[in-house]
Length: 439
Image (cartoon, rainbow, N blue to C red; front, side, top):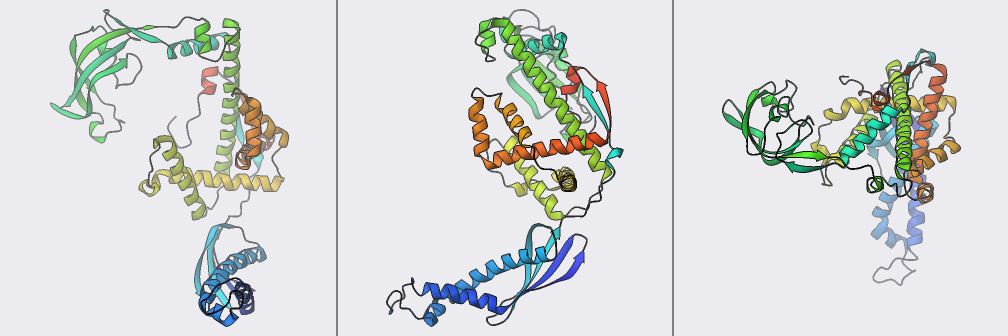
């Protein structure tokens, strides 16, 4: 087999590959010879069909099959010979395939970039530290009670925290605008579900009363025609309902899986969940901050195929999250919408892979099991969940990848300048803003 690099620009490589004719012809003949024993052709007994006749009937198809397989296998032989790391599948061009002649073709593809990692001691990380305090517990329990609260119709005037049922019509310059009208809508005052001034403007009104609210849409509102627009909402209050908080009793505790042990057990469960959330939040924040630093320190030339693959994955994630189960053509979503994030993910994938290669890291089996046990602990039958993860290679691989990222994070932290920062629980569990977004 003959291999030569015809062109090398940036990350693109063009390999000209030549495969001896004998390799093709011998394999084609072997398959046709085998077929003589099994094919049925009119005028011949099965197993007695001459090779020449079989070739007349099936030679073209068999050759196409063999050539396809040889192109694939010879490409991988060629990249190993040239010590290249291709990204994705090659594009095959300029193929010469004639019986009795060498098979020649051009394989065009991109390769992974070479990465010269910066000194990890230049990384600077702020590691958040927090505790679950009694005040944090109290606040969380109130949140849980609010989630289970009910509303009872009242004759009182509306105040913050009450639920009002309203009809409203919004107008701009005297004309109704799209999305500015509703009937029988429930709204909790103080929920900030509406633009500034709408909810507070209804405080003090009772059932059957009407008002007109003169408001201004924010400058960053999503609808272009309403950005910074002065509008009026004519609102009718149909009813006012006051919130009824649930009692801290066994019925309430059962809603959160606490069947026995009463309030003491419930508080133990709440605290355990909060501590687990805190641990995960700190781990995620530190990892993200490490990754941000690696990205900022290491410039990477990216193969377009790698970025395109990340764009496709981001589109699929969006459809799964917001598509409501509908079949959506991914090509309808513009690539530019995902490009910046895709480039970042692709670059980090290359950088992390380089760290793993240089440091010869492999997933720590004990950590993998610990992470799976941690996931399983949130289910009613943890052992079944653990067994399921170990029975599914794709699930196990996903956990191994996470653990490997954790190991990379710890390696970086061991060499980086790390400063611990004591913060309140609420601030630590709140995610950092995404890179490039406003804080």
